[in-house]
Length: 304
Image (cartoon, rainbow, N blue to C red; front, side, top):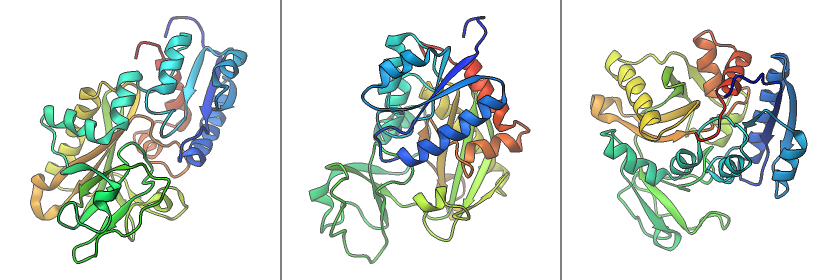
């Protein structure tokens, strides 16, 4: 940002993606916190008239609270670059890259980071046959929030039906048993490691329903694993050229030691709801929600 005082912030939320409802909650939480920090805040539910709505709100900064396709994949970032309005989170390239889970893994591999084995497979290839030995996970490669996820366990029959609204090409990924771990990176520095404890799979309800999961902060892990999570998350943030805030997710099979720790994906715009992981980690480090979103506004820029 320039030295110009920032007074007006426009928060983008909602949008047309399957993560719309989560984004609406995130945006409202952010707007409330920013008003508490003294900013003049407008909220826009993103649609095809987004550009004129942004112009009418006359912002100094746009806080992008959109999740999923269109808002998190470089599209809105490109619009804001064209309009020359400073914005939060990662830029066009990083946002597009991180949204594509398979391309993200290519970057991880090139950086020497361990990943879960996966492939892109058509729906027709998945139905009624096993694309890889079970157990495995089937999910969209360009969505988040555990939307449209299927788990095939050892001994299960192949998937027989897949939701029509899911894309024709899906990711098939080896299922890694054990711990669900995540690390938030703020300004290039990892905050801590959270162990996400659920009764089953960390699905949409476990992420966003009250009591859906228990978050152990900091995660009670062997030092080698804890330190590796911190290191890998910071390296993931860097190799994807992320800016501002990101969150990298892991699975860890404790029976395999360090070799059982694998990266799944990096979220360039993690959730900011009351049950979200990034605000919890910031609070653990003594950073209030208001302080975190204020920092993100002050960090906003174009050419990210």
